[in-house]
Amino acid sequence: MRSPRNTRRAALAALVGITLITTACGSDAQDAEPASTASSSTNPEGRVAVSYEGGVAVLDAATLDVVQQFGTEEFTRLNAAGDGRHVLVTTSAGFQLLDTVAPELTALTYPATTAGHVVRHAGKTVLFDDGTGTTTIVETSELATATGTLPEATTYTSKTPHHGVSIQLEDGTLLTTVGDETTRTGALALEPQGEDWKQIASDSSCPGIHGEGTAAGEAVIFGCEDGALLFHDGEFEKFTAPDEYGRMGNAFVSETSPIVVGDYKNDPDAEGYLLDAVTLIDTERGDYQVVQLPEDVQYTFRDVARGPDDLAYILATDGAIHVLDPESGELVEEFPVVDAWEGPAEWQDPHPAIVADGDIAYVTEPAEKAVHAVDLTTGEVTASVTLDQVPNEIAATLGAH
Image (cartoon, rainbow, N blue to C red; front, side):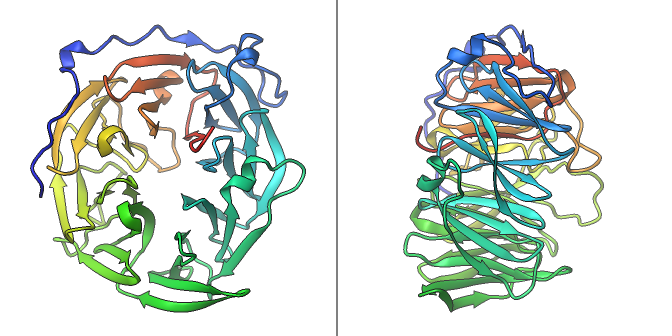
């Protein structure tokens, strides 16, 4: 691997203490009234959505004041649309647009029987319906101005439904997973031909294919149960894990770095959802390595984000954000943020999560019903809020504001 870079971070001793937690005066979720009059004058550019049982709250990104709350289904997932304004709420009806600026949980929904992954890349927002195998491709910029009707979309439907994911590249190439209700095997590369698609490449050497990430130069990585699958320059390439079972299920990427950080699990029978190692894949050099983390640094799929300097930020069970340099594979700093926590019994259960937007990370602390904003360049907690509900998933609006 490459030698470590010199970090510009201040020493841990310079960390600023956690700011006083403020209590949000949230209204009943079903009423969807503003949580406070003070929040109505807040600059709407940049907001955060947090789901909880039966609802979703919109927070001001700077202050974390609750702007408004909306009732929804018992368990929903949240994904940034990538337009700086909307979050896609996955419900039993499909992908529902949450306008964080209005704010409004709109009636605009891209139908799906089992709404799954959302991918943002190259000015496209791509939705995957696990129940039908349908990929829906939307111009991200058109989502930003959506009012009474949904922007038009392009679709592709897999031969068989499966838990999958798709991404469209700059040149129009569509990468999409292959599988059925019981197995997933690999991916296809397709090019548009009028209203149809033509297959240009395929690979079936990626059992359990899951997750997707795009590194520098549009190097696209998918996770496999025995390594990872790369698509670059029109071709697929397989990376093999050092263990017979070496699953990467999620890729954490920066489009300005060639190195992909992936989660890693080498025991298919392990109980719980905590992980203690990461994969580092250099898509330029073709390197694939597994890095074992210290004993006290365990995490789940919700606990890794990429941020400033293309570093990786791991929210671990000891309550700290551990800063990983992907070029060296070393942990270079740590920022205490929340109390120590235990892994969830089920993956859907509330447990600490991290998302990043620029230099700021947003961290949930379900045990305290809290959300924190952290400056990733210093480790300072810049804002905190205590909610009336237990936060579960979290999404920042992302994109141009």
